[in-house]
Image (tube, rainbow, N blue to C red):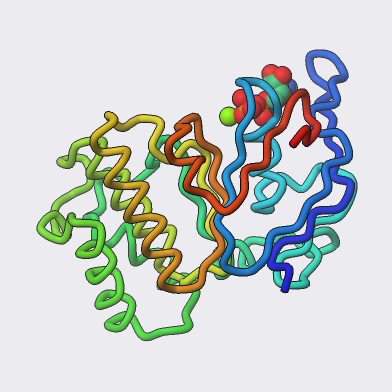
Length: 223
Ligand code: ADP
Ligand code: MG
């Protein structure tokens, strides 16, 4: 079954000059597949991920996740859909620095209101453990190293058991040793839960372990 269906997605930026950044992009990803997105800097990778994750709704064409079309939802419905079905890991962790690591991971779960707070807390703790940072659970995020904070950010992306997890160079700020560890964990956890992964990466070793690589140049899929 297609978890993600992308059909003729195009996008223009109009400022400072009119620029078509995505040019009729079409592809599908099956449930449970692990796909890497590669391409030179400026080729449109981040723009594409922001569209696919519903953070950017200013595009033409169609994006369906689990059969649900992103276009045509109210902003409120879209925010709920994103929180409950899509996990996103940015290059920078964007943790709330004054909150504990545990609380950072719990927040999307509490917002979802599907499970009681105690269950969300338990699950958040388990995820921190899987990512090897459970000993940091009750510390303020600000006190952790960048690599540790990125692990917490990955746990946060997983808390709602999203059908699809997207990462925009999720290890771009880590050293090579941490990159390997974190990417391996990321892949392993997603595989265990049958989750679909779509990751932008510059790391050829990681990309070579994907089920499939989608390579884009100048806003078009070339292979
Ligand atoms: P990548 O992630 O592959 O490096 P991006 O998706 O960030 O590429 O950018 C693709 C193109 O779109 C680049 O030419 C970039 O300068 C342009 N771009 C990105 N964001 C904006 C924006 N908000 N306004 C105008 N142009 C943008
Ligand atoms: Mg980018």
